[in-house]
Length: 347
Image 1: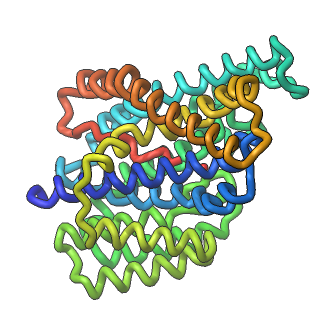
Image 2: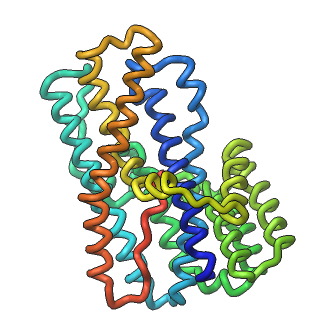
Image 3: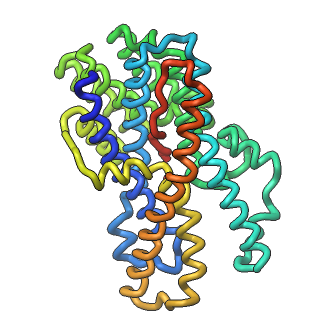
């Protein structure tokens, strides 16, 4: 595993970057930037929402990978979850409060017919911060937070069941059947991990193969079973993207400086792209009229380039700080701090 870890992480960086940019382009060519919307770019990136599925498969591989590498035991659950919370939570909160500030400015300058800021409540914000919106009637302040809720549900489940499932291929098989059955329970609507569990388990199957716990034929057998489950849960396209991601992690060697760069800033892209894009749209339309296709594409390019630059700044100033802080706070535990997978995460 150790000899292959660098290779895996290099591939994962590229896949993260692809996933984050896909989600970003999907939003930018759709409802997020309505002034720049056109049939060509909308159709070209209409599949971009599937970047979330890529994130979930990656998470299903990398989180168990980290736990396995560090000989995780249930007594380390608070260290594991604590690091994830400190690493992922504060950057997301900062992005959320920047979005709230945007809402305030929109209402203050009456830039929209909707009342964004005035409709917010303390309870809604708290539920956003604890990722419990699915269990309430409130809405997400930042639309991408729903994937973080799914991620944290996965973290809790894997922290509790990791050693039980990992040590037995039969238990892994039973886990697939149990999670597939739970999809039909009423709680699946709120406990969204159950809806996407097949994608996470695809990543876990890749780990079992990488750790030589299963042969290729067993791996492909698990993957077929999970593909059938994913098709029932999610449909054809998410299944295709999920299986393709699992196969890419298992068999494709990608080493790219560009991929590494976008992999590093993928979480920041995910968190700030809607905020950056929507803010720039309101400014740019006062400078350049988006009344022709070339003008719309040019303005979209400006929004994308600006998002990449500002995401890099957010990564350097915010993400890196909390990465170091998480490592410092939990330095006595033996679990390393990894970059967030999403986040997906997450459309």
